[in-house]
Image 1 (cartoon, rainbow, N blue to C red):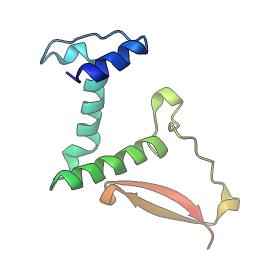
Image 2 (image 1 turned 120 degrees about the vertical axis):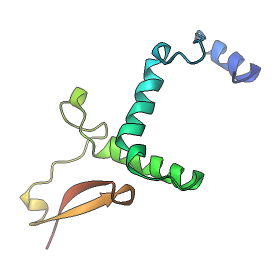
Image 3 (image 1 turned 90 degrees about the vertical axis):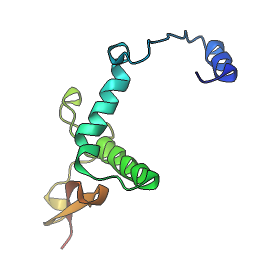
Image 4 (image 1 turned 90 degrees about the horizontal axis):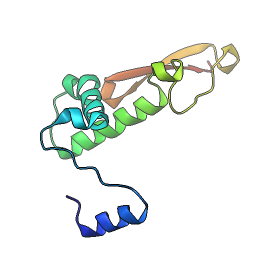
Length: 111
């Protein structure tokens, strides 16, 4: 599917190629999980205007996913660790919007 150069490179890394049957999502659970998450949490809530808009939206969503979204498997933390913001970081809590207002997170700021 990717061509002989890719296939040769993968084989040189010691990776075995496993072919899945066409239109068999149950054979590729990782891809199906990713596509389902993107649709449920992002694409089902907006109207995509063009390819550029889609790329920007997905980029913003992935930034949110890695920096702010809670994950059960990570004890309700996010993949990129962030410092806890205590009262010493500021008395004012502000709302920060992401992905064109689709997502929000809150940060402390000095008054």
